[in-house]
Length: 321
Image 1 (cartoon, rainbow, N blue to C red):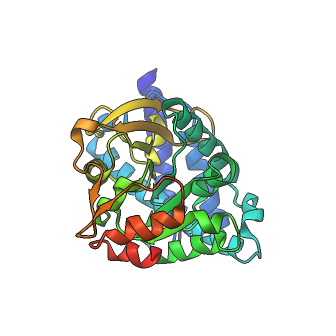
Image 2 (image 1 turned 135 degrees about the vertical axis):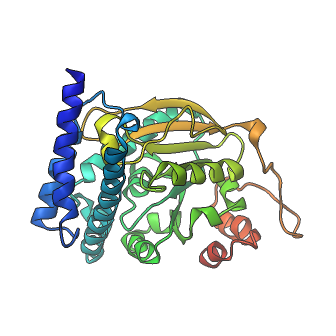
């Protein structure tokens, strides 16, 4: 029975993959929306399938499908970011994005999990792979962490430009949200400044890339800092890459793994950087400028003191100086 259930799922997913891969464009349209909606609905119900045990042919299809999903998701977010950015106060119109309720649920879930494992309210949060519509950072900043500074990292300058436009007119968010155009693998000592680091589901599109990013974060995050990783489970692994908590997070102590069964697609893994694995300990050497202390509350102090001291990270320094 289980085998038949898995076979039917793979057949449905493969049929949708064939239709999606034949599209001329993945920009939002009636056909694109319909196919991806059908794909999500196909993969949403609980299913015992283990995608790592599928044939090489199916594995290749899955890898290609994840890339297509990532591309379509980026185009959808960019499209709605442009629409929202046309309003005088974009933050007042976030509900125009069709998946905004999902982000409200996911952000609440992640905040709840975070508070269960950390008694300290984070001063500085990093979101890696924030994209043109950084809804997680925005929702967390608005409803859950009203005094926290959010540093959003994305490799795409146009994505950051659109994201910046969304918060620039908001007196509160414009002071607490910052955007850095950088490959996270090029960000080193600055990572030690963050109490919590979120890793988006589509940063690292395959296991090798994902593990490389996680190992980099392990090397430079502060001991005791929290890593929030988005993953996928069961049939949902046809939509997003999977993070194996027992194998991919070796420099971290895994605190909890949560697999939603509702319309929130991503699984959530929360882990703490192990103290004994620390590469950088406080205080951090400040390139001949004395000792740099981890800032307590003020974002301005963080801007002037922390990032400006990271000489090798000029791209970030230019944005924050």
